[in-house]
Structures are given as C-alpha cells and as structure tokens.
Length: 281
Image (cartoon, rainbow, N blue to C red; front, side, top):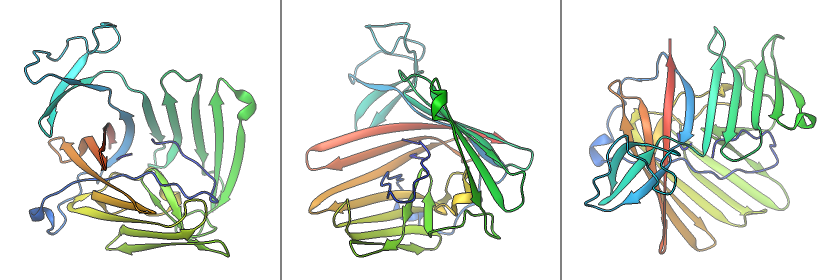
C-alpha cells in the first residue's frame, strides 16, 4: 500500500508521502475483478531485509543477522534487479486495523520498533452524520484528545476539499502565497502541481497499473482513494527529480501481500518493502 503509515489530522499541512506501483504495457487493459471485494485491510508493516551475496546459502529459518541470531529469522529470499535480499521476521513500523460488524474502522493502531508506547486512534459512529475520533498515545496518557467531525451525505468529513491517497491527503487550496492543484482521471490522482508555500514549486506525476485494483480503504470518511495501484511516480522539486516504482507480489486471489518500492534520484537509490494482511468476510 506504500503505504510511513501514521494518520494525521491537520488539513493545513500538505503531506507528500508517495505510494507507487509498476506494470507492463499489456497491463493497460480493462480492470480485472476486484480481489478485495469482501476483504478489509488488517495490517500493513515494513519488512526487515538485508543484502546478501549472489552465492549465499542463506535459507528460510536461518538467522537474518549474525550479530544477533535470535533477533530475526529469514522468511524469504528474493532478487531485485539482480541483487539478492533476505527478508526477516521483524518489522520497524506496523499498522493494525479493527472494524465493526458494518465493516467500519473502529481502531487504527500504529507501532514503531524502539519507540515508547504506540499511537491508537479509535472511531465512534454513535451519532448520525458525525464521527468521533479519539487519540491515545500509549505510554503518554496526557496526550489523549478527542475530535468530533461532521459528515456529509456521503459519509465524508465536511470541510476544505481534499483527496485522500492510501496514507496521506493532498489539500487543494489557493491563497496569496501558494497554489496547489490536483488532476484526477478515471478515479486516479495523476498530477499534483504547486507554486509557492513551504515546498516551493513542484510537480508530481503518477502512472497506474490499470488492471489492478487499489488496496481496501480503511478511511472512507476522508474520501475516495485511487482506483488502481500506482505504476510509477515522477517528482520534480525545483530541478531535483526522482522516480519511484513499485513491484508487487500477490496471493492466489490476486491480493497484494508484498510491495517493493524502488526510489532513484541521481546516484541515490533506496528500496522499501511493505507487507499486507487482510480480514476477509
């Protein structure tokens, strides 16, 4: 899904975390059946991994790190652009979701390895056309707070217009200092343009894997997510350009169970692997 996954409620900030996917030319066909039709997103987590030599004999069940053989075990070995990687059983960041009998999100749990406590958002739908969201930071009870939102006829939080995209939202606004606009095509966010403001001038273009449905949306009260998985993102910030693409692994029903994000810019290259689990009813 990346897709960092911490929920933020400040509409004055434009988040720019990019979630991307990859596809081939033949993928640009009619969308296939949605494998998530009866499924909800249950957990999203970073996958721990390390590079290994091409002739490495490391296998599933072996210790991932020699310096601490009990810390993490190898769960898979994969090849990315000719380089072998061993995937571990531990994770740095994880998000867990719980739903009620009506498939509405009632809890979002966010944990970070090594951090004290965890973030927990709970959601209550007891009153018509309202959503009450409570935030607790386990370990720091003085940070607890509650916010009540008004919902429109579609069950979306009322207020300044924005589009929510898997992890973060982009605010469409224009004032004396900045202008930010978005272009949506066939249910997908394809372009973001901005001038002025804290980020300066930038453009972000998205391409999509048009035969693959996007992940289930745990937060429908923020609006629609992109219809399809992203193929590639190209960003340009005042002359600095980066490209990110994703590669997927699917289960037998076609649901994404692993996403590999490859971000490159000049001589810089970074890989992030994300795992997904689902609750199907």
